[in-house]
Length: 137
Image (tube, rainbow, N blue to C red; front, side, top):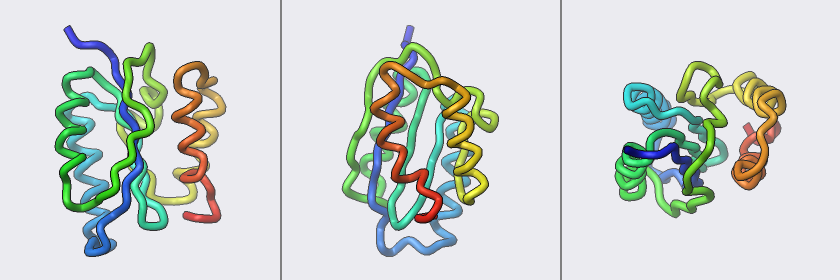
C-alpha cells in the first residue's frame, strides 16, 4: 500500500522551448496527471516552471523521476518531497490544473486562502508566493 505524498519543485524552462511547446507541455501534463489520479498545479512564468504534485507515493516518484531528466527544463530545485496527511489541491479546479492567466492565479490565491492550508504545507505555500505575483504573469 502506498501513502499520500506531495512533491513540489521549481525549474528553469529550456531556452529552446517556444510558447507553443510550453502550452503543449502544460496541456499534456494536465491530461497525464489527471489520468494517473495526481492532483496539483503547474505554472509557467518568467521562464520558470513551478509544479506541485500530490498523490500516491509510488505514482509520484515514478512521474518525478521522468520530470527530473526531461530536457525541456533544467536546474530542478526540489522544494517539498514528503508524506502528506491531505491534498492541498484536491478540490482545486477539478484535480490537476495548469495556470495560464491572471484569472487562474487569482482563483488559486482565493482557493488557498479559503482552504485554510496549514502545518506541513506552509513552507510549500510560501514558495508558491513569487509565482502568484500577478505583476509577473
